[in-house]
Amino acid sequence: MPARLRRAAVLLLLGASACSRNPATGQLQFGLPSDDEEIVLGREADAQVRAQMPPYDEVPAAAKLVAATGARIAAASERPELPWTFTLVDDPAVNAFAVPGGFVYVTRGLLAHLGSDDELAAVLAHEAGHVTARHGVVQLRKQNTARRSVGLFRVIDPQLRHVGGIAARTAGLALLRYSREDEHEADDLAVRYVTAGGWNTAALVRVFAVLASLPADGDKAPPWLSTHPDPALRRARTAAALGIPEAQAPTAEPEYLAAIEGLAYGDDPRDGYLVGNVFVQPRRGFMLELPPKWKVAHDRDQVLAISEDERAVFVAMPTKFTDRKAAITDFFADGALTGGAAYEGVVGGFAMASRAFALADDDGSTLMGLVAFVEYEQTVIAMVALGPEATWAARSELLAQSFASFGRISDPKLAKVGPLRIHTVVLERATTIDALAASKATPVDAATLAVLNGVERSAELPAGWSVKLPVAR
Ligand SMILES: [Zn+2]
Image (cartoon, rainbow, N blue to C red; front, side, top):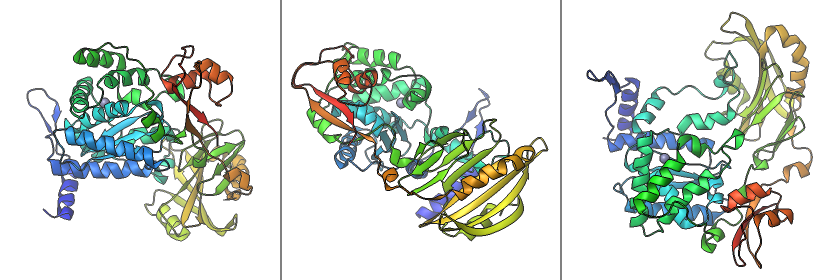
C-alpha cells in the first residue's frame, strides 16, 4: 500500500476507535496493530517528542555514543528490522523513554549521571525492550485518538485549570506508562541484549543504584521514577537473575567521560530565564516584562505568568505563523471568542496586530482577554492575557505594560549566558566529594555532586579517579 494511503487508513482506524468489549472479562480490548501501523504511530509520536525536546547536538561525541550504543542493542534485539533511532535529547531532567516503532530517547540529564558505556547500554537496552515487546502500542493508539488540541487554545481554556502545567505538558504527551509486568519484561530483555552485545552486565544492576540515588521529591524528582516504578524491587530481580550482588561499585570510565565532556548540565538559561519580573529569551533574542509578583513558569517555548489569586494569566509563545494577520484570523476562526476592539501597531519596533475578546466561562460568568501577534524575525510571537471580567479593568493597565514591553534583548550581557557544563578532572591525590565541594571547584553542592558521580559524599576517592564537576565557562 502506498504510504499516503496507508496513513489515511491508519487515521480512519483511529477515528473509528477500533475497540470492543470482551464478553468474558468485560474489559475493552484492542487488537495489536501490524508492524507497519506501529511504525506509523511511532513516527507521529517521534515528531511530537522532537518538537518539544529537540535533539541535543552540542557535544557530537555524546550524541554519537548514544546512537552507536543503541545501534548495537537494536542489532542484538529480536526486531532488528525496525527503523531504530537512539536520540540524545536536550532536557536537564533525568529520563529515558521509548515510543513504539523503535524510537528511543535519553536525556542529557541522564547521560550526565552515568559513568560508563555499559551503564548507557543498560538504560538503552531496557527502553529497547519496551519496543521489542510492543509495550505501549495499544496505549499510544488510544492516546492519539484522544489527543487534545494543544497550543493557544489550551492556554485560553475557559476555566484556567490547565494553564499551570507547563512542565506536565511534555510528560503527558508521549511518555507512556507501563505496568509492573511490562517493566519486568523490559528488564529481562535488557539482560539479554546487554549480554549479547558484550557489555558488562553488572551495569544493569549498578544503573538502578544511580537512578535510585536521585532526589525523589519535589520539582527535582526524576521523571524516570514516575514512568518506571519500584527501582529497588527491579534491582533485586535483575541482580538475582544475573547471580551477582545488588551492591555494585561505581565506575568512572575515561572513554565514556571523554564523550560527555562539555555536556550542558542542569537548566540552560539560553532557553529563557528571569531577572526579577523580566523574562529573557536568549535563543530567540527577545525579552519582556511580566506583571510584578505574578507566578511565572517557562519552558523552552513559552512563558506563562499567573496572577496572585490564580484567576488571570498572561502567556507568550511562538506560533506556526509568519504573518500577524493570518495568525489573528486563525485565532478567532472557530467562533468561540467574541471579538472586541482591534488594534494595529508596533511594539519594540515590530509590527503587531492585537484584539480584545470575551468568552463565557463554564459558570456563566465572562472572561475578558487580549491577544497580540507580533511579527518578530521569521516568526509570529503570540501574547495572550485572560482573566475574569470583574477584575479585568483593574488589571488592564498592568497587562498592557507587559504587552508593550516586548522587544529585543537590550543589554548584550543578558544574551551571553550559558549552562554549567560537565568537566572531568582526574584526581591527583585522594579526596572526598565533601572536600571537592568545599574547595569551590564547582558551584554545585556536595549532595548534588555525590549523586552526579554515584559515590558517597564522605567516601575517599583514590588518586587517578575521574570526577565529573559541573563548571561555568
Ligand atoms: Zn521501563
